[in-house]
Length: 254
Image (cartoon, rainbow, N blue to C red; front, side, top):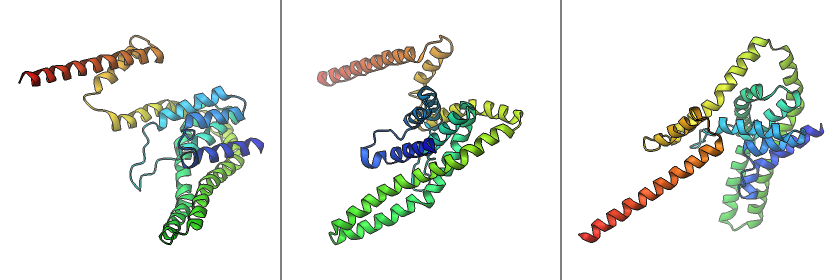
C-alpha cells in the first residue's frame, strides 16, 4: 500500500511539472522510472527502464487537437513499478508501456482534460468581468485536476494491476512470454523510426550513417560517438564560416 501511494504521488507530481514548476522535464520516463526505482530500492534498474521508455517514446509527438500522444508519465510509472515489484525485468514492462500509456490517455480525455476545458471557459468569462477571484480558483482547480486524476489512476492501477500483473506472468505460457521478449527488442527501433520520420532529411542523413558506422563497425561507446559528433560539428561550423567569408569577399570585390 505504501509503495502504491508513493508511486502514485510521483506520477501526480511529475504530471503537473509544466503547470507549476516551469517544465523541468521531471515528467519524462527517465526521471519518473528512476524515482519509482528509489521507491523499490533499485534506482539503477529504474533508470535503465526509464532510458528504454525514452527510446520508445522519443518519436511520439502529439500534433493538433486530435492526436494526443500516449501518457508516457503514467505509463512509465506503472510499468516500472510492475516490473520492479514482480521481478519480470525490462522486456515485459517495455511491451506493456504503450498499451498502458494509451489507456492513460483515454482516461485523461474522459476526466481531467474536459474538466479543465470547462474551468478554462469559466475563467474566460470571469476575465471579461475582471473577476480575478474566480479566475484564481479556476487556475488552482485545473492544477488540482492534473494532479488528482493521474494520481488516482496510478494508485488504483497499482492496487488492482500489480497483483493481476503478477498472476498473469505466472499463468502465461512460455512461448507467449518468449514472443513478448522478441517484440520488446524491436520497440526501441520503432521509437527511433518514428523520430526519424520527423527529423530525417537528405542533408542530415550522412551524419546519421556516420554514427551508425562508428558504432557497428568500430565498436565505439556513446562517449566516443559524442566526441566524433562534436568534431564533425566543429568542421561543419568552420566550413560554413569559410563559405560566408568567401561570399563577403566576392561582394566586396564587386
